[in-house]
Image (cartoon, rainbow, N blue to C red):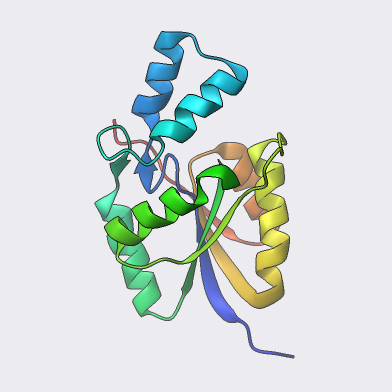
Length: 154
């Protein structure tokens, strides 16, 4: 049996980046469908609207220093991959692997992340998943990972 490096899977929105302000603005503007997601994508990496969680960043850095591979699994669209990588690299100080929602995919986040997990498990021993959504956490738990719910600090 081939050794697989231990890995931690972490969500971005609601965990590493607090994007609640963006969703509040979307609701206030009454945006739906494509307009909603276009607005989100425009501001998802905005420093004023998406606040960085430095406490979680410290935890991820500690895990990384202990030999864990840090992998980001997000339902964000591939359309904003470059800006997401820049934001994470700048604020986090390193860039783990990044799994994103394929363009045109409208499946629920838990289904998107289940596909990510299949790919991740080919190369890593994923043992912890950090997320803020119950359906995602249930999926990770059913797949044998310790699922850690991150609650909003608002």
